Length: 402
Length: 232
Image 1 (cartoon, chains in turn yellow, cyan):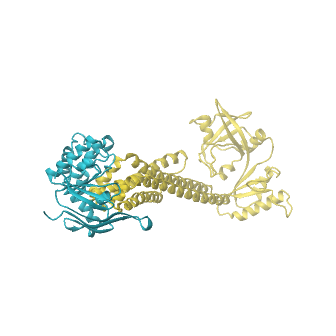
Image 2 (cartoon, rainbow over the protein chains, first blue to last red):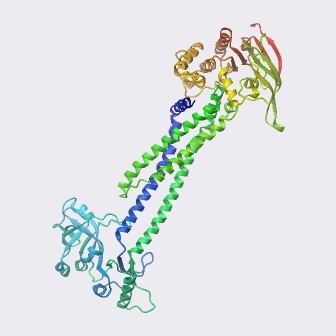
Image 3 (cartoon, helix red, strand yellow):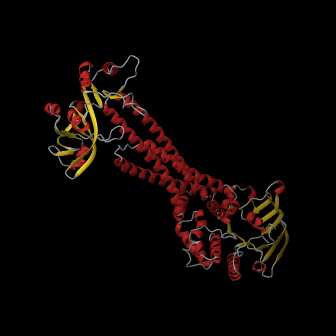
């Protein structure tokens, strides 16, 4: 009896290709969308949390102005000077590196290639605080730093844009009005926590940038990295009181500078990721629902035609159970096919998109099973339940169904 | 005369409830012996189709007793009635009721499939039945590719492929022109005389009724007259 039902079910599927295709499509989309979305979301989350972990929690960023974020007032606040950097180095305990940073957007030209990037004027401490390694060439020499020579260390993106795959060390780049010798290449880091390209950077001695690019002795920000085991809270407090003193702030005045702990950034980002994950979950739930409704629709739309079919089958001697088995098998086969195709498609899509978006591909069995199970269940229920109702009618009523 | 194959006693059928209730059959008594060819006639609304559906176990009466080969059909459950349809009855509908997008061959094989006949038997029997109704060469055509008369002949082939005891036909010629109608009636006549299949046929065309050997007239849900024809 089941074998017959299987035969009949497969025949019906083949015979109604369009209906079968639409049913399968509904399930494919329901399953595929959910899995793709959640898998990519998980990958992105993983990537960001990895980046946060790689930042470490012993880095402080000191900037003029009151706070980060909208409405910040950095324009009016006094910038730092080299004397501030020296004072921090001498008077705050437990520091590993103190790197002043002067940023300036520039257009770089090498041969026939040009590229817009940002120059950071800084010291060799930057390699420590920014956790940069040299892939080729070398850091700045004391002489170069003191004299403000036209030398630079470039990031991997700048190398790719200007020199292709070649070794840039020893070549020359035109930065605004002057030529600058490339003395080093940084090891690639990839995307930063905010999605920016960390490798799109050019490092120069602080003095070079001040003299030739910004034309002032101002320092935009300071990157302070703490020795392992240093109490960040104590170091921040020390740094704050030092800077308040140097900037002659009255007892009750607000700070006109901002010390940011990367731990804080990490916490902020974790919060954001939590929100993102919740959002993704909600989107996934909605897609499941929409996919489910699609499946439901196509199943219910064909009920009229199928009710007559059930009437015919009953009239020529089919048992109720035989009809039900046939419809159940049809629903299961279609749902399972749709589910499997959906899973496969989602796998391919995740593979392609994750490499395109530079995020890791994390196969998540739970979401695959959930999406498959949910869609297949809807397919089976809405394929089977109306059939059961029809099969319980007197044959003549099923035949008369309009 | 042998014991009747089919016996109806005081059968009533009411559709709807309360004010809207409509009594289609109001106490029908009828008995039909094996091998008869009965035409059921009557104006529309007289209950002849309802009676036909009850005879075919496609519908259940509101009250009364239906005995088939002495078995009280009312006491059978749904599955037993389905088995009765499967084993003993063949049904030809006015609207053909073939499965769409399904070849003539497969439509005719279907009752055999439910009987559990193996593929080779189904195949041969269905071909033979289609040949009997003059449709050899049309096995692979779907209902949409067949004319009305051809579809009706497929339906008849489907009804007789199981060699039923009784063939129930509800206006088998209702949708056909007169030439096709006569072909179908001659076919039914042959099935009755050559194979001894009991045929009960609803029709409103006196021409068609005269192929039968007995005519039962329904009026207002009751048997009004019951007479033999010249063919008998």
